[in-house]
Length: 521
Image 1 (tube, rainbow, N blue to C red):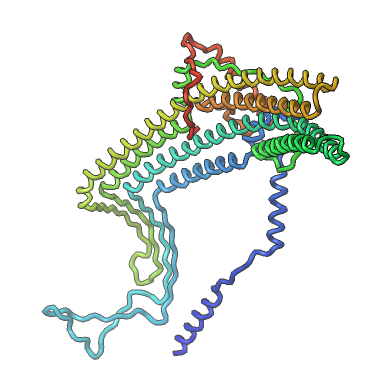
Image 2: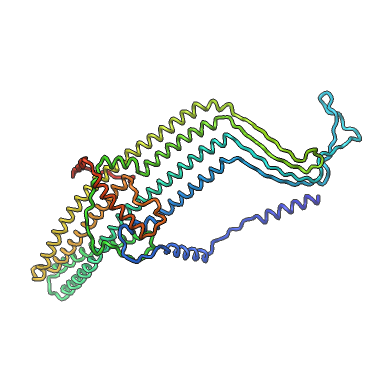
């Protein structure tokens, strides 16, 4: 009774000690974490000079958080391969134990007669085959041949999945490159135009104040003054909306480069924009061939096909008999044993004979799985070829739009010059001058937007054919070295494309051709 009471008290004490109390995170802990996160996010390379497009891409691929996330996913997949490799090894188990009894495990035996044991006599003879204390040690080796084969196939599948994560990492790099190119030229346009919009807003505000003063003094017809003020307010509203759209461009580029929001930096092409039209001389057939060979999505489908084939192999292996091989060395301190240490070997085969009825279903499932994978690959190939054609069409259209926007800006600048001359000679009002200044700024914005779209379309061509902008060891380079490497590769793309241009004619693009939406590029 006393032993039972002590056992019950022990159980109660153990349960009380294992109880869980909610532990609320303190505001001080959250504050410390927030300050640490701000410090970590700010620990990027300092911006010491104006940033070019090449350097912006280099900073993005080295510091962008989404890119780092994909790199960690690839590292995790690589670690999974190592774990699966260990699963192919046989099991080698070492164990040791100790036991002590309060009494000897004595037992008696009787004869067995006519299917029933004889009655135990009044003075039975008890025998002992084990001491009250004993300790054991053993080392046992076991290996399941079928499990080894399955683990080998799974290891191959995990290796292919790791390669898939590498291809997805490539895709992220391609997307980041494309996003940075578009954001960079938007930021260049924004910074150039903001320096012209702000003085124009001040000029319109001064004209509005003067008009109100004229209205108050009665120097002009009240209705004319109000019309004049309404047009000025419409211009101010348009300028404010335009400035609001442009203000976030640089912040977006900063986020892509992995810089802390609010970091001050300048852009190379703001002060002296070249507006050079990038030439594209790659033949369409060559673009299609390279896209089918290099696009990350298509390379991934090839790995998926190998994974499906390995899944079929694993399914068939699981239907085979299992062979278990064992070997071990054992030791027991039991003094009643003749041999206190010994070795043993063994083999066992087992097979679920009903699995034979699953062979046909497994084969049909395997054929369906491989057919599905093949259709997915062909569908992806068709989508990639469509994107290649669309990227070529968009480049041609963007180039025409840029040419038209440049001509429009030239006309707007000449009109603005004539308006300023007329305003100086009092032949035009200040409102006309402000209105034409706004039109010139808008025309310049359209030209910059068209050029950004042209650069974006040019870069998308190379993204759709899966060309890699970065070297294999780019993570070991700093921003300056990687930026130089990116610039050299840009030059190689254009010059090698021009030198490799075949006799194939460029496919003409009709002006009324409808451009479909590119959903996956």
